[in-house]
Length: 306
Length: 253
Image 1: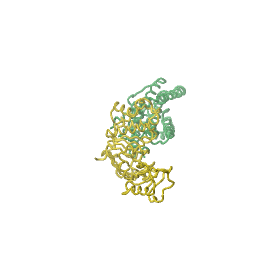
Image 2: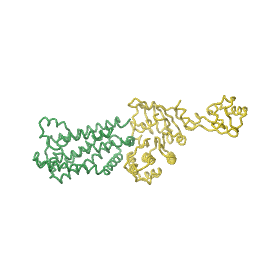
Image 3: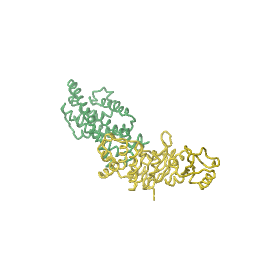
Image 4: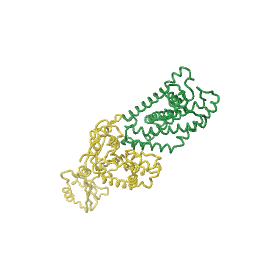
C-alpha cells in the first residue's frame, strides 16, 4: 500500500536558530492510527504544523496522497483536518456557525446533515446554538474537532486531543477516533498520555530533539523493547535478597513479601528457569507468581533518556 | 478559485459587523453629524462659499472620505488581527485557500462595510446641507475604490501588527493626519504655495479631490490623476499582500 503521507528529510530551523526538525522522514499509511510521542519541545507540533501549512519548512518535502504540500497545497490540504493543541476558538459565534464556516473554508458545499452528525457524535448537538464563549474547555476542544471533521477529511491530525479533558470525555473521544478509523480515516495523534497511544495506536513514532528516533508497530515495539517483570509471592517475608541469588536482577517489594525479577523479553535466555531453581535451592517458598509487561511509557522514558 | 471559502470568510466577517452594529455604524454616523453641526452649521455659517459651493456642502465628500478611510483601515486591520490574536488563524492557514481568496474575503467584507457606511453618512449629510451629486456613478466608483484600497492597507496593518497598540498607532498617527491635511475641510488652493506642493505627496489629496469632483465638478488635481493615483495605491497594497502570503511574513513560523 502506498503511504497517504510521505515526509522526506524534513527540516525546520526557526529564525532564532533553533532546529525544531532535523531530517525527519516518515511514511503514514492510509487508514492507520499513528501516535507521535515525544517530550515537550521535541518537534511534534512543528512536524504537524509543517504538514498542515502553518510552518514553512526549511528543507525536505511532504506529499499528501501524492500532492506536494507546497506546489499542490490545495489538493493536499483538502484531505486534511487539523485539531491544534491550543484551544483556539472564536468567541461570539455559535457552535453551528463556526463548524459550518470551516466546511465552507475548505470549499465544500453546504451539508447540514453532515454537520448535524458530527455535532451529535461529539455530544455537541444540544449546544449547537450556544456561543462558543459560554462553553467549557472540554466542549471547546470538541468544537475544534467538529470543525476539523466538518469537511469530511481523509486525514485527521489531533495534536494533544485529550489535554484538559476529563476521563469520561476522553473515553468518548477515543470512541469517536475509533469510529473514524472504521470509516477509513487516517489519524495522526500526539499525546502526553502514553496509555492513549497504547490504547489507540497501530504504530508509534518517537521524536526527540527534532529527530525521529524510532517508528514501529505498537505491539512490535512493546515486544522489542519491553521488559517483563516476574513477581514471586513469598510464603514468608524475607529481610534481604539472599546472597546466593545476587547474580540475578532481583528486588524485594516494600513489604518484603514479593521478589521481583526484571528480565528482557528480547534476550535469548530470560533466566527464569535458572532463577526458579536457585530460589528453591535457597529455601525460599512462594505460593503464587505473576508476570507483567512494561508499559509504553516506560519504553518511552528509556528511549528518550538514552 | 475556492469561491466557497471566499463566501465563508466574507459572511463570517459581515456577521461580525451586524453583531457590532453600534460601534461599526452608529458611532461614525454620530461623529459625522457632530462635524456637520460644528463645521457646517456653527463655523460654516461664517465662511463664505468655497469655489462656488457653500461650505457645509463643500466638506461633505471630505467628511465621507475621513470616515471611510478610518473605518476601512480599522475594520480590515481588526478583522485579520483578531484571528491572529486568538489563534484561530490556524484554520485559515491550513485551509485550501490562496492569498488572493483570503484577501478577497476579508478585504471584501471590510470594504462592503465602508461603502455602506459612506452611503449612510451621505444620507445623514443630506439632512444637514443641500447636496448635489454631479456624477453619481463616478462618486460610487471612487467610494468603492477607496474602500477597497484602504481596506487592503488595513489588512496589511493587521498582519503587521503584533499588538493592539500598533493596531491603533497607524490610523491615529498616519491616516488621521493625512486625511485632515488632505483637503477634507478646505481646498488645496487655499494653502500657501509651498504647502500646496507638499500636499501633492499626500495620497489622500487625490482621493478627496476626485471624490469631490464627482459631487461638484471642482477638483484640486485632475480627476484622471486622482483615479490613477487611487489605482496605483490599490495595486501597491495588493503587491504587499501577495508578498506577505508568499513569504508567510508574520503569519507562518
